[in-house]
Length: 217
Image (cartoon, rainbow, N blue to C red; front, top):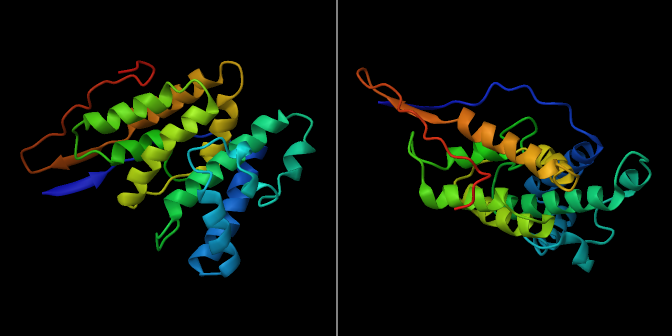
């Protein structure tokens, strides 16, 4: 019996300035953390205090990340951009804690794909699905961050990485008019497009049950 994991072959748009900055800062801190550099270890400890919270309300984060490029970009909603970066970095820092490899993987799994990998074979794990649904129906960024925290803990437990630069971009778009629907659609598609198949010589992959993260349970 063999088990394989398939990923969606969907093209992604290029990262915007929010995702680009988040990816650069996470990459820098991740390299330092994995090299056991004291300044990076201390930075992650500070970032973790904001995981699942309204990052803008945590004074310990002020000045930790250089957000100036966001505030000089006239095309951005500056506070929304900064909140997205802070939230993504805080979640990543929790995900990275005590992990010997990088939990931010550029070009890696989108949130929906990573959540699907938490589930065994072709089965739908209902408690995990409900957590995913609750995240998708969050009415504000602060509530979304809190609900994503729970998913991040599950991903860390299973040593599953995530593309946090992409997540930062999505958290920024979430705060725009019509943004939650667009982000939910992307998460839902990546969830359904990626699933594990367990096969034998006589078995055929089971169908993945349909679930719409726009419908709260």
